[in-house]
Amino acid sequence: MSKLSGKVAVVTGASKGIGTEIARALAKAGAAVVVNYASGRDGAEKLVGAITAEGGKAVAVQGDVSKKTGASAIIDKAIKSFGRLDIVVNNSGVYEFAAIEDITEEHFHRIFDINVLGTLLVTQAASPHLSAGSSIINISSVVTRITPAQTAVYSGTKGAIDAITGTLARELGPRQIRVNAINPGLIKTEGTNTASVIGSEMEKAIIAQTPLGRTGEVEDIGPLAVFLASEDARWLTGETLIASGGLR
Image (cartoon, rainbow, N blue to C red):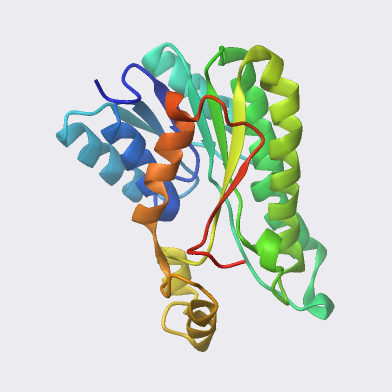
């Protein structure tokens, strides 16, 4: 029997990158998956098609996680489609780097609203539907450990996610709901390619500091989400699992 057979998962920001691979991995492990997207409808529908073609169950739903109505719509779709909810992956996130003198209110609020407020609103909407044994997985970042220059706002959002993970682990623990975070290092995604990070001097510098000597792949993250969602991780909560090839 598959590890997640009979389970239902919501993955936010799943139309591309890490979110797509997490949704795919959860589906392969037997979960029915709600694929959330903000604007990437084509990517979300393509993923749903791929999952169903392999015999899995998936639906796509549009929703802005930074708005309460959007967060609620995502969770409502899960309940309407599959009748329950067991796994929530708060993956939606944006990044934009700026030196301290270039930070604006708009820059701050855009990143914090999606990365932090979005995590809280989706979890808030999901909480009433979660029962004992459920798992919440927040996608953070290794930046909380290495704190690169010109990432004060982005690193601040991920530091908040780490703190929220610990807080919610304590708050939801009495209900036997586990809350953990995955903190990836640099990963090859559409975003890091578009931002010209992949192939840059920055990437070379990061690889030079990474004991395993390479940039991460989205396939490195999916199995970790399956592990944290499964009974194999039943004794883990409040943890930040650094997935960076050893980069600290």
